[in-house]
Length: 415
Image (cartoon, rainbow, N blue to C red):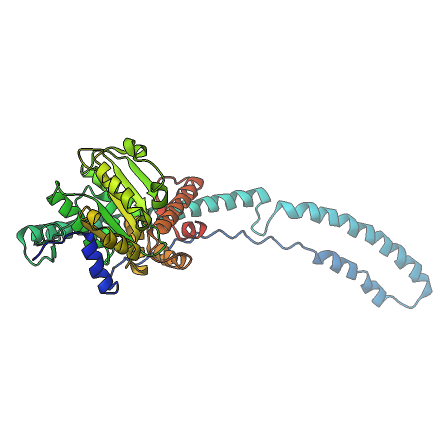
């Protein structure tokens, strides 16, 4: 098969297919485990005050009135008796009031009831804590088992790739030969989240493995996105993985917009030696300026990698009009075909990359959050996920549980 000349030819094929893409891989996520609901103890009902007794005592004087005889000489004798009885009733009330706070229906004082309430609350809190600890341990064990199975599958795929048995093969963009797709190197940590996206994974894996196979060829990359969507973070992740894999000598990363690059002198890039330069909206760069940048980035000059990010149509027009620089960009990574499912795959990979964990309800909430931003805007989505994890850290510190790093639905809502 005839080798590819450059990324431009690949862009033309993409455009001719009207940006077609394969069905995204179906993902399987573990069922969400129910959140533990803490139950608060209910205080014991307050004892009813014996208010009825005074009413009965007031009713008692009526009995002699009902039974009194119509004799006139006994009427004055009943009145003083009633008057003497009334003060006794009034004197009984304070005695009842002082007794009521001391004893409850259970025969305990208010202080004893409060102590019992506190003890019961502490007991239930300890039970809830123990149950939560058990639940977290079970989930951790489950995740560990899943990761172990994933490692075994990856090892099996690698063995199959080495043996060339039943492995999907791709075309090497340098030689045009059919080669096994393989897997990402272990040190390409910041790129693994993209390998889970069906429409993007092949481009990422193929580019990295081809660069490793052909270290003397240009390492420059073109990252295609949708119009107005940010893909600079993808370029940063390539730069970090390149340094981790020792494909570049420095961890320095410079980011610049095309219009700004058009106005500056290349002496501004002297400090970038051995690192990576990311050009945003690269379709707007002046061709002569990009030619200067390519010469300045050569191994015998400042020896840095150039990563172009931008919208697919503008970059296609740029390479069509500037064939002299097209050959310096062999590798093409398409982000423009990513959909909602791919964005959630990206979220899973990024949360894991940062050392956090999350359950299914979190990703369902992230789907709702995606409606407020452009589908495929990698930069904006990753910035949002950074805020989610910051909210997780703040919540856990306030709860005295810092460092656990478990993202909850409330963290997504707060971000």
